[in-house]
Image 1 (cartoon, chains in turn blue, red):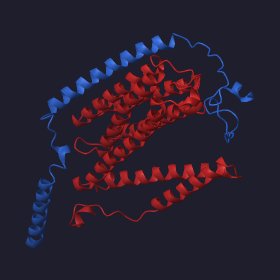
Image 2 (image 1 turned 135 degrees about the vertical axis):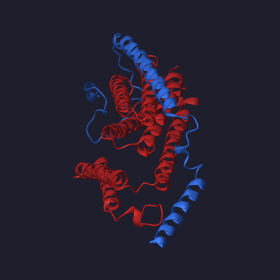
Image 3 (image 1 turned 180 degrees about the vertical axis):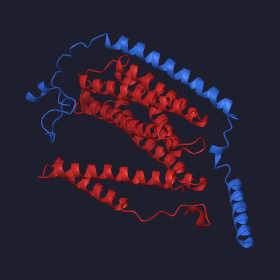
Image 4 (image 1 turned 90 degrees about the horizontal axis):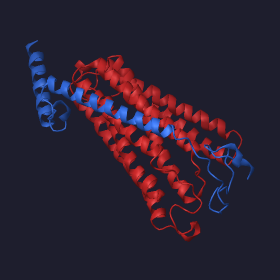
Amino acid sequence: MAASMARSGLRSASMLLRRGANSKAAAPTKRSFSASAQDDARETAKWEKITYAGIVTCTILAIYNLSKGHPHHEENPPYSYLHIRNKEFPWGPDGLFETKHHADH
Amino acid sequence: MIESQRHSYHLVDPSPWPISGSLGALATTVGGVMYMHPFQGGATLLSLGLIFILYTMFVWWRDVLRESTLEGHHTKAVQLGPRYGSILFIVSEVMFLFAFFWASSHSSLAPTVEIGGIWPPKGIGVLDPWEIPFLNTPILPSSGAAVTWAHHAILAGKEKRAVYALVATVSLALVSTGFQGMEYYQAPPTISDSIYGSTFFLATGFHGFHVIIGTLFLIICGIRQYLGQMTKEHHVGFEAAAWYWHFVDVVRLFPFVSIYWWGGI
């Protein structure tokens, strides 16, 4: 009983030592940028505000962009390096993101 | 279990998932080649292989979660494995994308005479970088800010806020993927339009693929956070997802500047 207690005491002491030696590698528990729960709460609130600012910016940009509409692009001149088809795609003549009317070339 | 071992490492139980993953990879590669050549049954074998690989990923990682969250095997020493592994994996991804940027620069800095000696090549209808690409460029960093919000919430023990933050992160990511899909569909050039199309779609395509993988990873973290599987001190899976997400986010800036903006003028 006493021997097993001594053994477990020795084990936990050696693990402490090992953890101490590994302390640089076990950096996650030693966060140098935050010392307390309040710092974490402040950081959390800060990033929450930054996220909301980002969402608002993106929404404005999105509305601006989507309201512009897309001009119809004219056909390209048939240069040899465009629309390369040395071998047909396994699924057919169109590319994956292409619109169907290119198939009749 | 863990109390009876005299060391802080994890000796895993035998598992069938490595071999099933390998068989899935074999089926995928052979099926892929068969599909492209084309031989009969190629598409079937390819799909079977991909399904097998996805299944293996699901059950393997489910087992890791069982061993860590439920069985408690992930001591600090064991956590170093996934931590360093994630960092090294991200470094390997950086190398992978570096290759595509090299390819793009090789072709664009000294355009050959066959494409008109100019970049972009003659006849390519280049996208305006200030439309969808510029829109997507703040969406991903906002998503990065949201994941940082989530991380601080987890560290502060605010579990519910962390779930909201992860929902915001994932929603922004899905919106940006949606816009990118729209852009691909509307873009005049295709992947088969000269070396411009090849480099453009490979670089942006792989970036997009990484965004989708990162989004899935974050969704899983969100589910786990909701189920209460992460603690203030122990959330290696979340940290790996957050690192990966920041990588995706930062990488996004490079194609925007070099391929969309510089490559279009």
